[in-house]
Length: 108
Length: 112
View 1 (cartoon, helix red, strand yellow):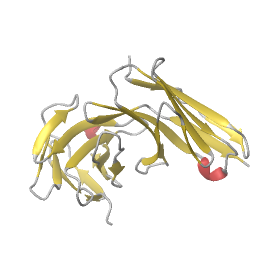
View 2: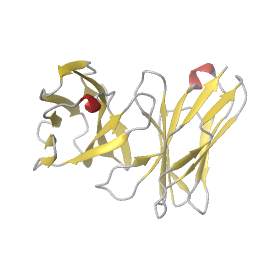
View 3: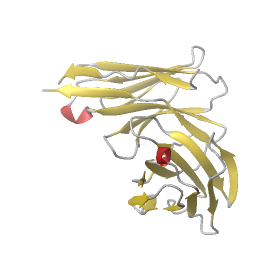
């Protein structure tokens, strides 16, 4: 079983739609949690950290459920520029462990 | 402030040769992490260096090795290159439990 599991998608949505991504992690001792964004053939970039209390950054909302070992990302009012792969990431024993990523394609 | 820098951007090697990849972390960061991303696959953890010491290693053969210098820059060496080593090699630096890492733009290694 993979340490971090995500639905690879792709998710194809129209501009303005709301889309949600989920992931699960297997190690209950995982210490911190993040969402990264990766554009084609580029390096991953930190989108936001994820906390149990939930956190919001503009159109993006992230949530962590430690009991269920579940992480979510909600994108509201999708833009064409949101098209990318979204990586669910957990930090464990000092290293980041990446999910395979979920591909989002926003269409006009 | 300069980000994480990696060199070279691209590297083409022949099977059996050795490749050396370089990384400079963000100023003030003592930890450097190396990841491999083969085409169409996720990021796989390779190595973690901190304060000049190897702290953790991913599930890769010993021909993947590296070191960290006193100025915290790092080298990744891949010996006896195989075709399957063709990938994007990413270096990242970061400090603190609750902080993510910042990645460099990577070295694209092609083994022919």
